[in-house]
Image (cartoon, rainbow, N blue to C red; front, side):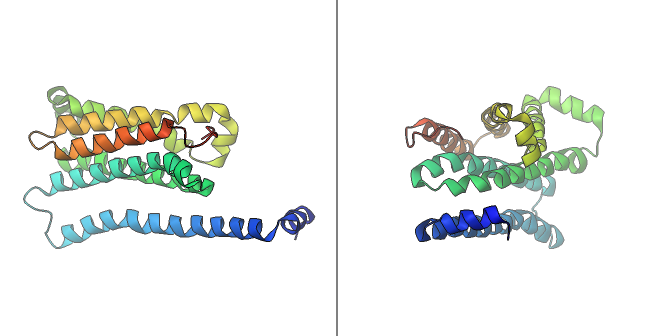
Length: 218
């Protein structure tokens, strides 16, 4: 064991050592739960596809499902900071990146379904659809903004960008607004879901700025 690690461990009190071990274990188990939870929706789609259970319009079913789960993971990632302040559990921040990456994964599945299954990469028809339905363009803008966030979700990028990394990742709020606008325009009659997700988003933004903690670094 390196000397500096031994000194650090030996200098910790029992409560500090137990707290550090508990946080490490909690992060590990929570990440496992996130992985399991994130795989359930896509596994369900595969199962329904194999058993012919996707309904009368399977492509639309897949598009709605993947888009909804992209939004859910976006909101979950935004919930980490207020939850951290509320619970005073700093280790929660360690799972935010994973939630953001799953948001990106489901967003990619959502767009791939649209381009491939819905339009078979027929770019002429896709352009016509964008002109006819502006919500498609808004959704595409949201996806494009997630690209730099996904690309810089690693320690090397964090170290290289330094303070600029935090500024860049504030784009998540813009993405949230665009995704919700995309959802509102997409829904024709029943706006129950967009209303619920919009209220959750507004609540998370409000909680983000309430004085739960004096530490505003994350």
